[in-house]
Picture 1 (spheres, rainbow, N blue to C red):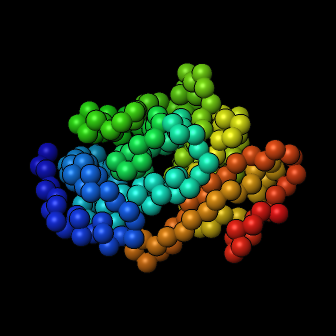
Picture 2 (cartoon, rainbow, N blue to C red):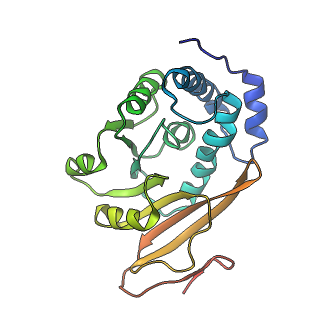
Length: 230
């Protein structure tokens, strides 16, 4: 497979214009990841965009916005994080170039995508970053500890995700949803919205929701304008 070269200067320019904080140390591994993604995408159709510039702005930059969002959350110093339905390593692989706390597991059932992630990890050596190939149910069965953070990007509808994540989150854990709309004003008990962030990609809004089960069984509502739970 022919490899598409990423112009490092253009990459740095696009990253600087993205509105996200991209560490200088992330630029080279990010370029290598995008080159691999372009190469594999020609044969396996891993993602929709076909140029590295589109892959960067439409897919990978989410991860650097996410890094800043995760730092705002009340997570342990070394959290255990599970990324459900990791696809082609998004958001996980670029995220781990900027946010390196704890252990991060990407779970992907599709063999070609999991193989791609494994190849990237063997090349880039991201800290404490792993991939599991198989259904999430099989991954859960092998886990002794509950997660401090579960992440999901278009893995399943968010209401189903709440049921899936609830018994597998640590008592103080959070579920982070990457969404194309703001969080709902009312969530099923016992869930509450603890943090939300919006940003723009290609003229379209995107959101992160951080959800957590509340201590009681009461239904909590959230006013997105004031960021006050009630």
